[in-house]
Image (cartoon, rainbow, N blue to C red; front, side, top):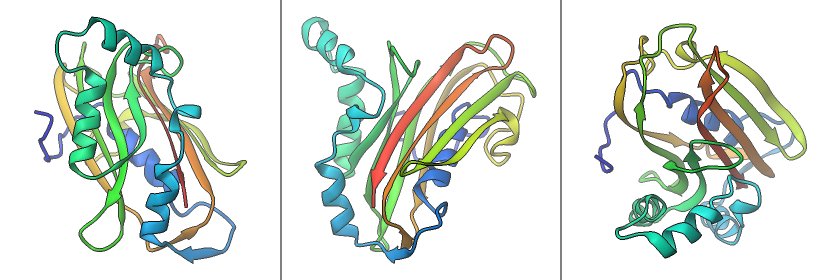
Length: 212
């Protein structure tokens, strides 16, 4: 279900939110400042994320011409708007030439007067993934400084959620990451790619960026 709020143990995309924790917070040598919630929301409303993120323009054009029902992109956009969120990026099947949209990442206000990043994904795993069979490639940037560039074994990234083996079949995943009240001003952006260890075939990819 798209609106499910539970955590899914064994979820294949748990790394996505873990990586966004890395590059949306904490990592910089700059002066920390108190986050102005309304100011950050306004800055990101006017920001063109497709300029950096995964280019889904071809999928939008295809959907406009051929669809008979609500498209994947429209469903995720509707979910984001319901939460009064601002899109930060999509989760797709490929970083460069996507053919499917599996999820969305967006920024919204939390009930504590601050901000949170929400990651939602629906995905069907075509095979069971055992320990050592999956990996996550994470790149995180703060401005022009590379904060993280690492390849991790999938099952070791978030042991609370990736209880290997990851079973074959459908998974819904939702993670809410509360941002701190203080963070360095600047542009945060990053890429997360989940792939098989043996073939290096990418199964899920997410790109996102935020301005503070």
